[in-house]
Length: 259
Length: 324
Image (cartoon, rainbow over all chains, first blue to last red):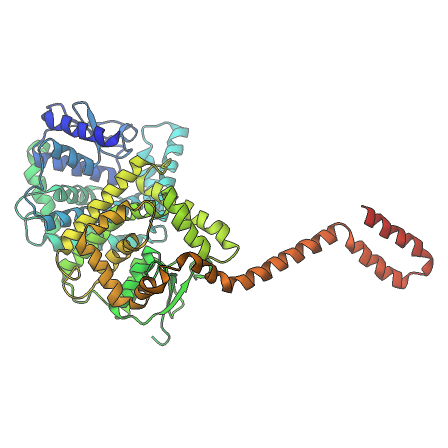
């Protein structure tokens, strides 16, 4: 069923232009959303803005459970629902909007590899700090995650989530790491990104790609979110070219609407 | 630096120095960097100091088991295969290693441990044949449930099962990852010029099992074989850095594999005979104890001390036991 259905869906997607009423769903911005979800959501918003596709951001308490993959964010376009950056990039590509068409094969391979680097190290580190560092989990993650729910349910859901993330960390071999080692990993990842970026305005020179959107989403969120300790942000701040990269994207794509 | 570090690895087969990806990564890196390690190839994870394989026991009696940690340790000992890399190349290595961990590892777990036919015909059989007697009954199954659990957590899907849809998704990601690696490698001998680095070790560790293991469901292998430069890359590394393992398989080992299995069991046979004899003896003894042989012993002792007029009662007891 799947192959035929997929071909059908992509044909449909190609046939319809991007509608004006496209929406992006994420958890409540002020009280609920966590660092990692906010980073992923910001990455998708940055990507859509780079493509010039209008999207309205809606905050819903249950967006995690509305999403088809259980992950945040997801977009609702016409009669279709797509979640996470990777599938959204493919979806917009089917509609004829792509940022990576100008790249050659090697560059595209490198772009994909660096995107996985961000997912594999930055995103995992964010999850680790949120749920496996006891201070952060108790003071920030659990209360925020469960803020919309009343007493017994809030505890159950928060601990369930924490338990799930911790099991994942154990499965990928991060369970035995200390917080310091995780910060080291973040530094290593930023070092790699900083090296790759060099003095260029974007990762692949003049034009932004989905990699730029993803890196911006994560770094900008890390820089602007208050946690129990500022260590994470400090690690990112030591790379000046990454800082100016974030500022450049913020000014180019977010300033006009957010101000 | 006095005694060399000890590296514990899964045994090899199919022309590979080890059957596990993580072990292959470490072995390849150690070869590339020329690190003198005392290699212990075993088939019993319980004999490894960390309880899992690979494991590196350093001469400071530390135990490391993540490939990344082992490589960092070797690097600190001045066995650095990445010495010549520029900072940007180091960054690229990190990125491509992440790419493989995100896209190729789930497909590898699926193809070796979750796909039912592959698991039953090849993976479980291999581990069951190579493990020692009591372990071979439950360890392969336990390893499988752990791998399935890992795949579920990686995919974030609690009720994930083997199926066409999942297979297609995972293999699609893996095929894309292989294409990207192939494009990055191009016509070079190694990923960064003429000498191998840690990225080459990772790529080799992930691709060599796919290339060398004959699985009933071999879609990944088919795809890999269509990428000539990656196939040559793997066989070149095998030829250059693991000449002994490569030759073993290509030569005499391939044809007599089916009946060779019986010969392999000969060293274990003695142990198995001994064990079964012990088990039988144990069963007989415990039966004897349960049915009251102990009381006879008591009575016999008593018979030596007691006066002879108790004799009839004793013999009566004997009869009772015989009857019951």
